[in-house]
Length: 372
Image (cartoon, rainbow, N blue to C red; front, side, top):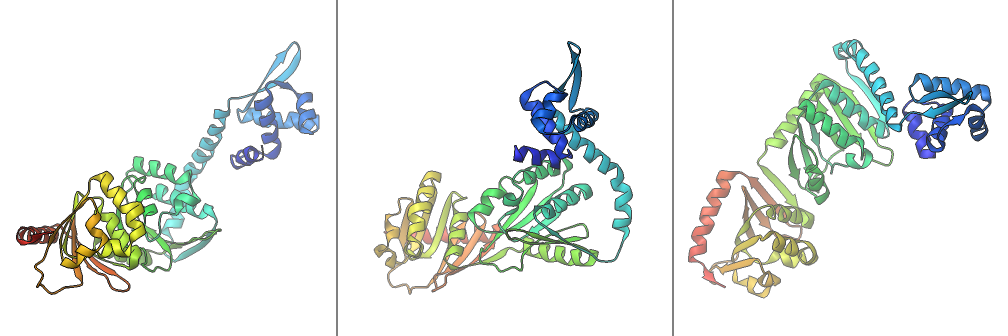
């Protein structure tokens, strides 16, 4: 009952109103003296509280054999309370927003807890403003598991678009699929950032994610414009850098989104450096999706686990060709130049013309290479 009482309090009911309404919902029609006994309230307080509930449309009364009894309205009627509160606020929003939006000075507010996220989302809906999000893994789903999906449905109806630049990790990619009317770009998960920021209209929002999250709300047109310009440059960039083994995993995950991956200069380094990942994740998923590798490899690959991958087709460079540690991966519209250094690095270009050019080069080499 504690959770129910808390929810009713958030909807605008007093503790006495919530107490009596819950008693009626769970116990059915009752007389005032019964409610007084069960609630521990004085009869006068019970009558006053029931009168307040009547005004709110949550309780009805009737005479049964000359005795006045009280019955609850259906629980769905509670939703009307929220609608009325929202309607009341929406009526005064234009008059309140006019001086706030007209103020040209910088305004800064610091909000604590999940309420800060809600404030930003409601502001976006009110302004009907497209917005941009940089960094993170869509942790907002954790802080607002019910409200964020509702926000996205309302945003969809209003035609508000969103763009996200997120860390390239499985959680972010999975959650991105649940967000409508949005475009995404994913970046190396080791990319440093001072925090997650959103920008829309003349707002810049900084989020510090912790157990008690902090939202820094900044209203400044010039600052918002600068951050928007930075976001646009990052979003439109066709090149990305992935570092470390987690970076290599992220690139490999991207290959699975396509029919095949082509390799020029392969040496079997990926399965060697990521044995558990290939055993538990990549190989089962590649088989399930019927993904295919075609690899023009150096003879060194013959001594590696890569030879046993069931989706792997291999042809070999001539033995006299000098080994080059730079490997080219081609998939979709992407070309990745991969270096298996002590801390591996991949330089990825997302460009259809470049990918098509490398693909033609691959097919030429494939025809003249030797079968493994």
